[in-house]
Length: 609
Image 1 (cartoon, rainbow, N blue to C red):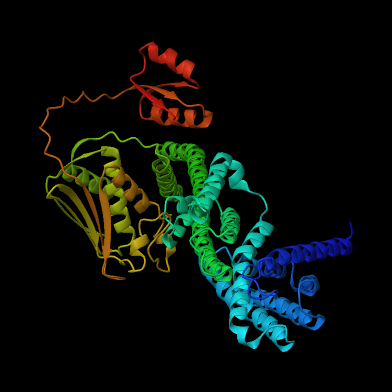
Image 2: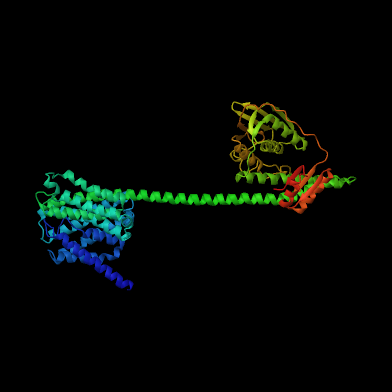
């Protein structure tokens, strides 16, 4: 079927539907043959203009002309009425498109009210005024009856727009009854209850019990609210139309709370009530649908957030695994180079330039090894691979030992180091605690010019054991303080970058290790050039009882077993230990190592992990 023939069939179907419903509506015309309080064609015209476009106006115009010319009046009055009916539909659709959301006008409650005001109340004034004026000017209606005819005409057009147009638009947009298929039993019960309530309220049911009152009409809203909350607007619109049909049928038989003095007055009251109910139920259903959309959007957002988080966590794990692999691959050759330099140091009668060259090599290799160790530790902490071996520790002893070790390397020789350590005990891992203090001291030394002061304080403060490391160095900018513990973040560097080595992982490692101990670390500074202070706070415990520990006698010579699958590392470490006077055996795999260990020969076993 071609597009042109398809459009022709669509227009023909629209024309036929308009004529059929128009004839049905005029069958209950009481004040005039051309004016009725039941006029579904207005809703059909509005739905057509909003869903098909303004181009379908010829079918609407022709349908309106045929309905009126075959009912009463003349060709002139039928043309006038057809013009008014077509214009009111075009105006209503234009206003909804211009000031509302067009065909999506029932998706939000505020747009439902816009549709009711613009398309149902305002635009229908055009059709009613044009129609009654055409009849009156042609002498087919008395001017004295203008008010009654106009009100009936306008109210019929308005209720047609409020009841029929939503029904058609909603089902044209989405003709698949998804929720009905998912809840067929509930849908069947809802339809049955709606019909029974309609017959009871508008039929003979309540009259039988002597309960004929307007208040009972509000019972019919209960199944409509059921449809609005449990299903969608489409199902609610269907039930509104069904209930309206039952009410009109019952009223024409003289039943229901709206049965009054005249049939037309009864229809006017009934249509006013059903129009109001339609707006109320459709707006309630729109609110429910808006909430459903918000929940769906929230679920989609949550799913995207979870996917993004999983992706970020995967990238983080990949980064940590890469750092661990990189550190492991770098550590072996670095160990070999360090061992080789140690061997060369034992050779006597060397040239002075060779000694200085080895010193430079040793310094740089030591620095590189320290960087690799920090990277590995950060990766291990992030991946949860570090397991603490905690025991009662006196922080004063640990801090003094770290200061002595660092001073022995010459890294503090150009600074004034002021240490005041009072006994303060905490449950901590000795190795990791040394790492925390050493990193803080190294950081202070790195950013404090020669001659500057580094102050170290240890004391108990309430239920916390506190270590403070302060310096008179370059300080920390205020904007950097919140990020000072982030990975790869460093303070401002001077022009001589070579004197401030590092990757910016030391403070990150401090924060994570302190966190593993259940403590916290803080940084403060008065700004650039004003120095800085780092404070570590750990949960404080009672001092541990003193214990006498028997020290093994020193031995001049050890039997050492080296287990390493790297031949170069294995042989270089063996050479270094043998030069120190130890007796060494090597094993390249676990089986050989177990055989030697079970023999009881080694006193010390060095295993590469």
